[in-house]
Structure formats: C-alpha cells, structure tokens
Length: 251
Image (tube, rainbow, N blue to C red; front, side, top):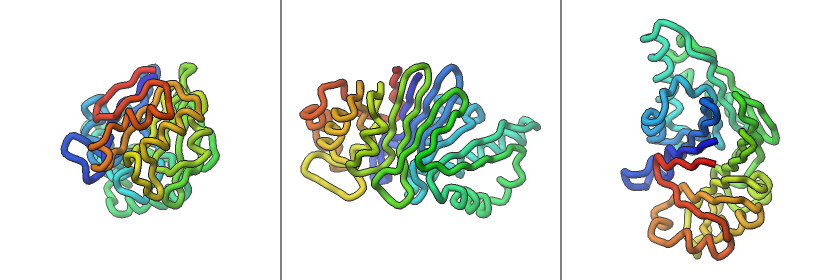
C-alpha cells in the first residue's frame, strides 16, 4: 500500500504546498482522502483522475479540504464526453451533511447532472466500508461540526488519517498500531489552537497509538519556522516524516 501527499499546506502556504489531499493506492486501485485547493493538479501528475472512483472527505465546511471536488467532477464530465462513453460510478463518502454539500455543488454546476457517470454519496460517522479492496473506518474527531478521521486498511497494512482535529481519543483509536499515522500538525509547541494539533500533541498521539511511522502535515506558516520533528520526537520514538507535496510513502 502506498500513500502520496497531494497537498500538505493551507491557503496561506507558499506556492510549493497545495491544501489537504492524499492518494492511497493498493493493487492498482486508488482512493483519495480530502481534495483541497490545488491538490487536484497534483493528483493529475500521478494518475489519470478517471481511475479514482472513491473520494473520502474528513469535513466539508472548510475549502482547504474540499474545494477541488469541483475540478474533479468537471474533469470526469469532460473525460466522458471526449471518450464518448461512461466512467465508472464515483463513490463519495463523508460525515453527516455530505449529501447536501454534494447536491449543492451539482446545483451550482448543472452540467454535472448531464454527465454520463453515476454519483453515489454515503455519510459516515462510526461506519466501516469495504471499497475496492480497501477497508475504511471512520470516527468523529474534534474540529468543526461533522468532522471525521479515517483508518484505511489493505494488504495487511493500516494508514490512519486525522483530518483536522484537536487532541482526542478518537484519533488515538484510529491510529492504534497503524503502520502510518498521518496527523495535521498545524502549529509548533507553544501554540494551542482550538480544532488543531501542535507538534507535541502529534508526538503524544503517535506514542499512545503505538504507530510505527508518523507523518506530519497541514502546516500553518508558524509551524514551518520550527523543528517539528524534534518537537514531536520528545514523545514519539518512531520514525517521523514531514509531508511535502508529491511525497510518496510506501508501507
């Protein structure tokens, strides 16, 4: 199983970081966790988007995690038109309210409704799904209303993804014994902001979860000025990586 970082920053990041997005591949199947501003461009550098048939959103109320859904749908529509055929069904998963969010997008761009591919939207809270050989579990996390984190399992390996959250037991549970724990590390030690994690908290979560590897991501400008690996390592003794766009992690 492989994870590729599509976006590791926020809208205030420099031009070398798109917003949140992660591609997970197993045996030629692909799913995407979040698709924030700029991440769709990086996705196209790695795989033909028509081969991605499942999107998982941690939350929909902040554009840095969902804004490129529009571009993804536009690409799929044009792909169907130019290839004079139908693409496979697109499955979209997210927390409560995702169906309404997707429907509003379709209303804003009626041409999507003319597309020759079906769209299925399912809402998750404590659910577990089996999708294209992946087993995906969700749990609510502490961020904006209706925010969830994910655990993705395939090939006997596990990747846990926090989405945006502050310190909570749900993230530790999702990351339990994970081969790779992907945590948003918005701030360095000394800064505490509601709904987000700092480097020290990331290290503590990884330690309690007994994760094998920790990938820090979703950096605010304040975080990029500090040695986040060193700060997280005070609590976590495993391998720690700093995300950058197009980074590949094989597990």
